[in-house]
Length: 331
Image 1 (spheres, rainbow, N blue to C red):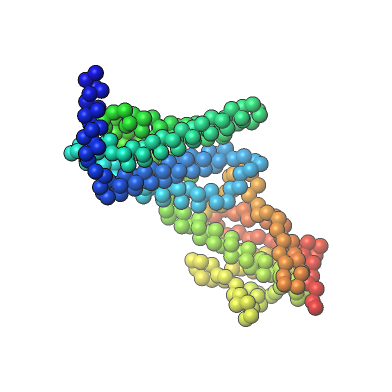
Image 2 (cartoon, rainbow, N blue to C red):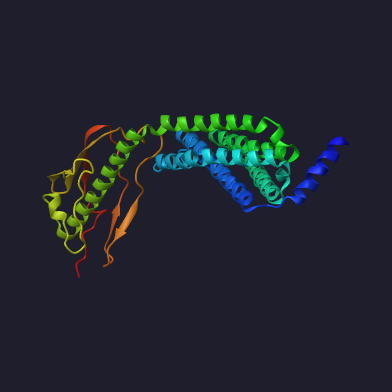
């Protein structure tokens, strides 16, 4: 009875306390940071699971490192802001306990509870559906567990927050420390997957080299399609109309090595800094089949290309198949 009376007094006092622009700013920004953190954590968890247990049917490895970098960057910025904003809000509530019962803050809290509840329900529905379909694999189970852990933790904390006075409890501080440990663990795990920033720069340089070699390769094939002969050097690919100039190595600024081996065979060579991070992934990491057409209706097909490499000097030999790359019909 005493507890009910005490709570009613706080609610009555809260009705006399007006919501200030500062309250709206802090509460709204804190919730946005919370959502960013949750989304980033789930994205990282899913990416780590896919990287460790790739699905041979659906997993496409390219973009994995970018996904980890993007999610980690958001988490590094958003999580400290979440802690700082939570600290400011708790500080205000300690000064004015009635602010814990502000309607605006309650609306945001219950909205978060609603989103967390829907997420958990959908997650459980997917789990049951996969179970009945006999598709309950380890990667899927781990993803379901990740969603239940993160969404369940958010739901549990805000249910407690609604029913209790956080200014008189050590629960928010305990949750803050546990969350910090979890976030730090997830970020450290990312370093084991993607490596240090220096290694990442070298990997991105290597990715740029592969992209450059692809561009040169396509230009060489187009050159052969229209002129029925391979260019002698990459300088022959220069086109004053399209403005194309063969790219050079992003670090040394030297031209990539291009050698004609046979009338229909050539090779492109360069030196890589790191091993291809996708070499160890047990799925097809080749580029998909595609087709390219010019303005005259002449089409050429680009088949799957292997760009596997290790650190050091590497050459890629290519042979033009006249059936796959028909000559252009000159009007």
